[in-house]
Image 1 (cartoon, one colour):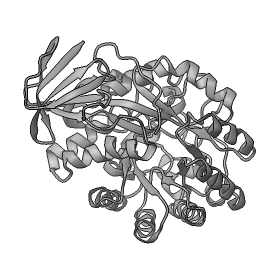
Image 2 (cartoon, helix red, strand yellow):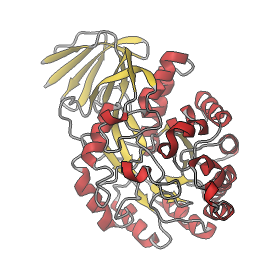
Image 3 (cartoon, rainbow, N blue to C red):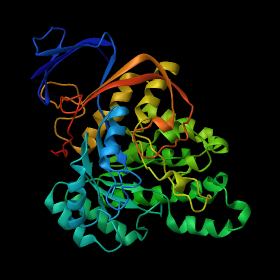
Image 4 (cartoon, rainbow, N blue to C red):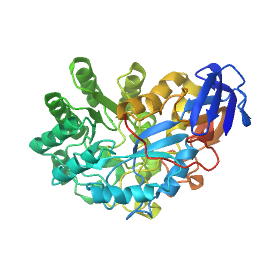
Length: 431
């Protein structure tokens, strides 16, 4: 079955795309013969977003999210591939648990990759997972977040980095230093501090900086591939910039939309719906991060989609879990910025959301609109205007710190492996 997407606006230029079953067969100005045609009338066409940072939940946390609802949310947000973090129940820290996750992931409407989780006692299991060969990378939490095991011992961290280098897989780090946060928490135990407005003070920016510094130091010694996740402060970004300029190991940097487009002021109205780790920081930090997006220090934008039950998020600050949904807002926020401010180009958005994520993970035939590549395609109507209304989300997490925000540009079609009506996701393969 051949499909023709005609009159596409691809990075400012007209383009026709011929799709043959799962793959892009041809691109160009020719009106290729096809079994069906879609006239996009100048709508923006992008490679589908590859989101390297999601928490799909399912299994023991299916009340928060499952692969069916998460992938519907992904489709709504123009995301065609998700990479799932390991802090599920059970955690993805053994081959047995990895297979359990794969069994439920087959429900996904979008493509998926899976990370292994490092714990203080599973080096042998990590080796078995890496030997099996179908894993995206190793995730390390250097501080406690919602549900994970913490690794902060430098000697043990180095062993994990060495294992990742042996198998040529990236290490992905949540960089907040656990001991630093514990020390801060002891200073803010009074009831008057039981408020989300103190979240960025308790999970102090210095704790993030110290963790990034430690991870970079070890990676420089070992020479493995390192991806620093959800950078939230100017100081971290400047340190990463320095290592990128002078280091000689593969170093990648991720920023989330919420650290770009929100700051701690939103907590006055969002409350715990804006509680996330690392915390929302200052407007000055957000501006510094956006500058790093534009000048190329930032490699990817990841949603850090982290759904929780609404009742959980409505608990008092100290009991409410950190995280909120992001699959349905991440790409639209970037498109809105392009359309309203014109300070980020469509080409740069493509680099951040599809091309570079595919390069980092070495996914086979994804992340580009090229002949021979999978037909993972997102179509945006630049004229559409809409508001974020969380009760209309496809995710089970019906809340958002973006509630009521007006956006320009809306996802009107998401095609996964050449199918737009009832797509079936695949586990990605790696080069």
